[in-house]
Image 1: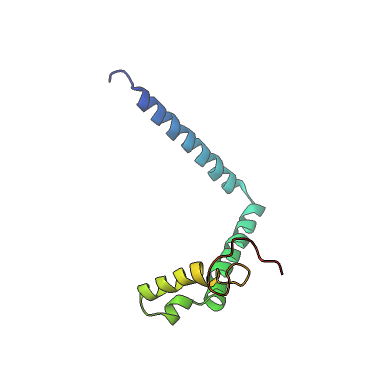
Image 2: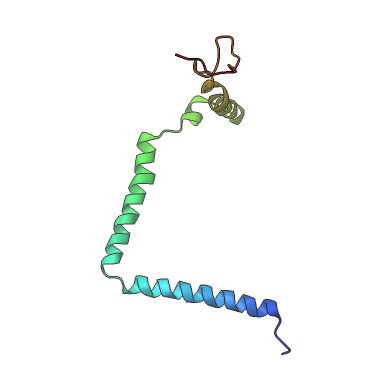
Length: 104
């Protein structure tokens, strides 16, 4: 067999702790009575929020309005960098950034 190395001992310790934590939670979930119902409600709520609501209220704007990945990337880059910076408070009429904020 030989002498155990320090790495082997640490690995066994980590797996032992991980196994004990997993068993702790597994036993806790097995013993739950009301908790199972609550977890069921949480799962149903997540399915409704991320599945159904996303389908109806958040359509895929980029896929419907642009045909290629290049067009989508250019649109996103433009929206992030140019469209929101071009506000009157931040950019002069000639397109340059003011040195000092302009009073209203």
